[in-house]
Image (tube, rainbow, N blue to C red; front, side, top):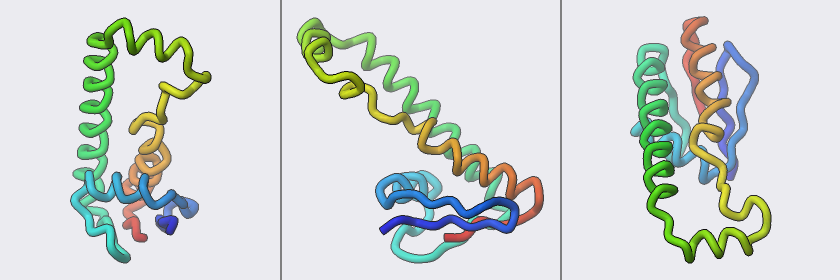
Length: 111
């Protein structure tokens, strides 16, 4: 089931279930039904998402440094893009934009 995020400051944002649940989990929000991120909660939500992005990028960098030769050989044989999953930074970008624009206009985000 896709999630539809709404704000009076932006157009609706539709996300697939797994991505939306991951972002809402990062924010500590309930993923079982409708919810709201109030204007007062938006700065904390932005900070939490940015910290999660930073942690993931640090983990990816550490993992890249510790790959062994066998994994490098498998990567060479894999189809293009098979080892480049979509990063959290890419997945959060539209949601962060919605949060920032909503905060600037004093509007909450609901789903």
